[in-house]
Length: 448
Image 1: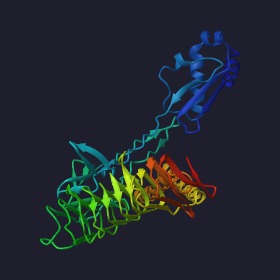
Image 2: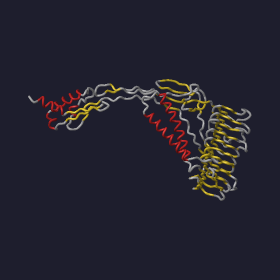
Image 3: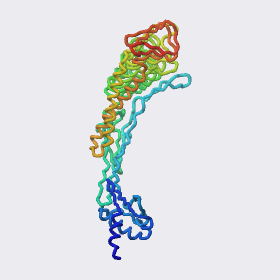
Image 4: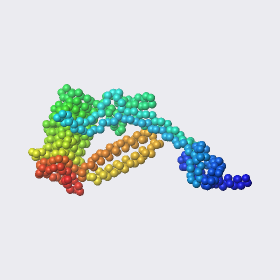
């Protein structure tokens, strides 16, 4: 027909092709009536194919395109293949036991249980890393290859003197090279020297001075000392008595059976101290002190002092804390002089510090979320920084749980002749009181 080319051109003008920004999808819109399409579907198919070709669409055109044709609404005519990024290697690391004291009944005896040191034997498993996978390139509707990111090999940071690596069947394994205690220093996995003494520390062994972790299955006899670089566990059921000194320069101390110090024993820890009870002794901790049952006639200095038993007591002596002291009972029916002093803190300063930390954490997480093209080593360093910031944030959040700007929480009962001082404000208990919390709010000593 003479008008055929004119009709073709008109119909062609009524076909619009759009290609998505990522070039993975081609859309077509046909402006026509249903009857026009149904009367000559094959003609419209040819025109659509030509329009796609004119736009450079050469890949992913649907085989059943004729059946997909519709009028006056956009439909998908061609679909590319999206690239598939490779998977990063997966790392499974030894998990340190959570340090959480538990007071358990064993018959008629209260046991104060805790896992402080994570011991391993030579050859025991420490970590596994799978290999990363390669990415699979995609293809755009214009026939262009779309590159895919290969998975990254996550570095395994470990102390090569105490940890050995073995590669087998596409998997890297890490094992302990020595007997010792597992630790993470700056997120680097290692096994520290671990001294285990099967019995008591006394004349047989002499005083102990060791740069690693120390586990004593028995006790420490009177007038002997144990000084360690890392954590110390004393696991004997009867605890320790008139020792000279138990000190951890970088770690925590756990004394399963308690301390009967006879006005001589001194316990010092860079981190936390855990003991079933303490009487007539001195404890100095830069972290928290957790006591299972009671503290009697002792001098205790720490960030926080927590008596864990529901019937626990502080009787006599002096407790000095920076943040708070929590005990069911403080003082005694015999009105023994008991002093609790809270140094106190600035809540505004802690909140400001926490706000700055949280901003740094958000920034690091944002950077890590967009780390596709970063070097694995750089990602590892960022994760290390994030871990340190999260630890600081958790510590501040723990301190901010204290009421006011310094807290003494008497959960059950307080007795006369107890002095409670928070910052520069103090109160003397003249009468027996029931569950009461003292704290500083707006420079005033409040009680609840």
